[in-house]
Image (tube, rainbow, N blue to C red; front, side, top):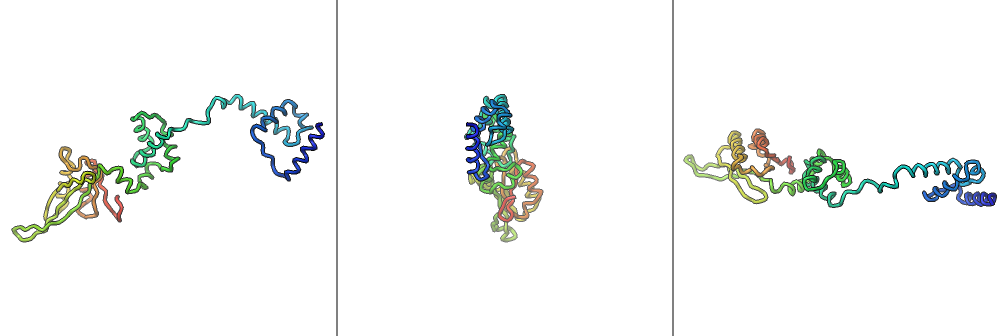
Length: 250
């Protein structure tokens, strides 16, 4: 009977024409259990599909698996709920300056607990880059949508005024809040200069009644009157000017 089975196996293997036989885990387990009972010497005489060493190695792995604790473990770390993942992605997209730790803290404040690495993995799965790169790549439309309620714009227009010396052109600086469309006339002057602009900056950022106290991102054009000293004064007051260059804010 053994000789017949061996010959039958040789014929079946020849039909494979040199192709390697692929075994399933169940097939390996069945051969390992029966091969261990026979022992190495008998396997040398009867085994024809794989070598005795391979069969016994399968059996050793079968024993090791019994004690590795895998039977008590699930398929991996529990997957983050879809709702938390969506909220995490939304926070990252709407707040490009938020890092993994900040997002984790924001989630904790509304009742979700999780590790910083979990936030990183969620953002990585959705193709969202870390904070420094995200700040550089954020689309202007996304920035507007995220900060619309705290944005304002500023510009000049001119009016012709009759004065004792005749018709005089005056410059009017105004601010407008984008969300409410509220307009504020910041100042009118015939000859704008840097000191006047700095005083305007102090007025609109006054902590009591300044027009920009709740407007964090004012938008300016490239007018030379918006000097570096003027923008620096706004920054010191917690306002971040956005200056348009080549159609894009900086």
